[in-house]
Amino acid sequence: MPARLGYRPALDGLRALAIALVVLHHTGALLVPSLNDDLFPAGFLGVNVFFVLSGFLITTLLLERRGAERHPIRTFYLRRALRLLPAVVALLLGILLYALVVDSRVPEALRALPVVLTYTTNWAALAGVDVSPYVGHLWSLAIEEQFYLVWPPLLFGGIRLGCSRRQLPWLILGLVILSAAWRAGLWETGHGWLRIYIRTDAQADSILIGAALALLPHDRLLASLGQRARSVLAWSAVAVILTAAELLQPDSAALYLGGFTAVAHRGLPAVARVAVAWSIAFGAAVASYRLVERPALRIKDRLGPRRASPTSDPAGESQVAPAQV
Image 1 (cartoon, rainbow, N blue to C red):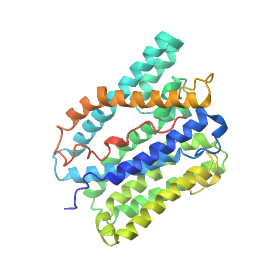
Image 2: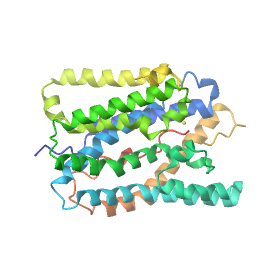
Image 3: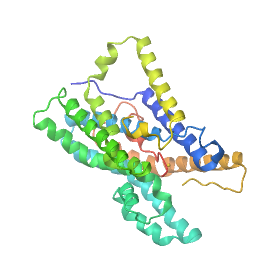
Image 4: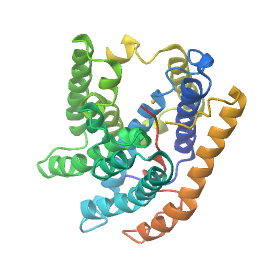
């Protein structure tokens, strides 16, 4: 029986790096346009970091619970619903209230309800469905939820058909290559970068890479390296992420050939816009966590065996609203 993943502080550090990149990217893109080309113009790559983490942690969670629960897939879906839906419903109610009181865009807010609750925000945007602009950032959550719907049956189905943990990573690698080739084909045929970036099929490789990593004997691989070698590899990976986020642009061909509404208060000086927007975003996140998500998490923790740490839900903290588009 493989060792349980448990709580890994390094993963929280990686999440923090991804969040910082996304926040800084949107600070330049929306709040201080003069810094748009200098303040991590490709900071949206933090979303891809989250995709990799999600694939790794969800796959690890499923494998750990497979032998410990009678109905692991059903319990998995219940836990995901309790983790995600309360905050999403609170957001939708807030958007609807804002539309009723302030901007009168009630039809758009109402059209956003089925789109968001069915986790099809990215495909609705690609189809030109006119929904509230305040749900645009949920495209990435939609991609993850679509992965959650498909991946558990595929993973357990492959295991039941006799695929071993040595064979599955190779099969996943084939899907990664197909997704990357498909994205490159879309780029070469003239699809706009944004229409490629929010497609599930063009983003599948990031999540699948994480899933493949979860199937590898990572504990043994890490144990074979010394502490210094692990530190060098870790900091080198961070340096690569930061360099790419700073040097690349959203329409850089390298991103597609193998390799996005915040409150602007435009009448205010740049420093004031940043302070106000960051304060609102942080305040909303804290309120959502304390008033909506924590009560739901207490219910979720009663499902299935308890973990060693209250913060050890592998996929729990990875569901943030990453990039605005």
